[in-house]
Image 1: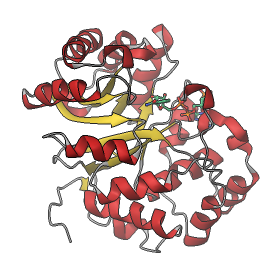
Image 2 (image 1 turned 45 degrees about the horizontal axis):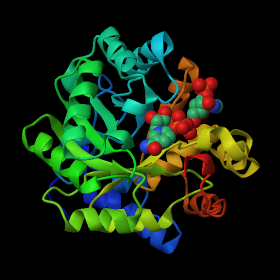
Image 3 (image 1 turned 135 degrees about the horizontal axis):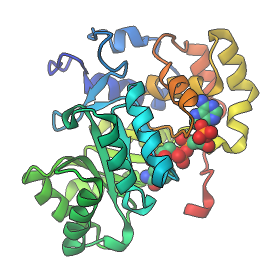
Amino acid sequence: MNTKKIAGGINRREFLQSGAKIAASAMFLGLGTSRIFGAFNFSPLESPIKNIILNNGIKMPVLGFGTLYLNGAVGERCVADAISLGYRLIDTAKVYNNEEAVGAGIRLSGIKREELFVTSKLWVDDAGYENAKLAFETSLNKLGLDYLDLYLIHRPRGDVKGSWKAMEELYKEGKIRAIGVSNFEPEQVNDLIANSTVRPAVNQIETHAFFQQAKSLEFLGLNDVQMEAWSPFAQGRNELFTNETLAAIGKKHNKTNAQVSLRWHYQRGIVAIPRSSQKAHMAENLDIFDFELDEADMKTIASLDLNITQFPEWE
Ligand SMILES: NC(=O)c1ccc[n+]([C@@H]2O[C@H](COP(=O)([O-])OP(=O)(O)OC[C@H]3O[C@@H](n4cnc5c(N)ncnc54)[C@H](OP(=O)(O)O)[C@@H]3O)[C@@H](O)[C@H]2O)c1
């Protein structure tokens, strides 16, 4: 067993290995989250969201807040609301055109910078060594921050190796606490690992009940790269919020389809970043730590996998 347990942090290897094993066998092993997360003991004054430990030793919340389409004053208000409810991981990107609003929301919340985990992403137009350095500084300035917790290559396009070299330097200078990728296939992550000095800490990919990404879950788990789910609700496509299978499981646990979905990500060892513009939904999405999906629930949800993107327009 990995002995690098940190108070308030989940043992990352346990978290990942549980996810990888589940993906490999397509069944929940019955470890139970109380065992997986048994090392935890958190005070009610803290956020209800626990942390996992990334491969470079830093903590990352197991649940975060997505900000796609949350722009301007709405974005600012949503980010402040989310933080007030206990979200600590805020996910933005240059291409969302809302980094200023996210920064304003952070300041409005009054939270201390060090309590947050802020992610932004390098867009494809900025690929390459020089461009990536410039794009990072621009994102930082727009956010009004002096460092990022996580910076991701948004898509595997253009001069990935040049972008990564720039990010490695920024990481080593202490301007980014962890660097990673997004929308990378296992082979592309493998190639990056083989040709770099800093292993990516995270791969953020589309993951939800209809596109479960078992191959990536297994690969990333085995390679100590944290998997993060974008569009954890598939934006409600394919009727996720009224899906009868999820609803039946929810009824059993007195939870909604959204909560069942997020709990399922959590039990697979995946960090999810749901987005909402409504404070009631934000609170609902946080309320997933008081129940447990059993082996039968996990198997039933596994059967919903269509193994295909629900966002073909973004391919
Ligand atoms: N790396 C990438 O390429 C990439 C791509 C896409 C997204 N992302 C990131 O992932 C985040 C999440 O993905 P997403 O924004 O595409 O979609 P999502 O989180 O899957 O779904 C958002 C939708 O779900 C609704 N919703 C949220 N909570 C709900 C609840 N409890 N009950 C019913 N409806 C609920 C929201 O509506 P309301 O506002 O009405 O609550 C919104 O319409 C993004 O915001 C972004 O940060 C990254």
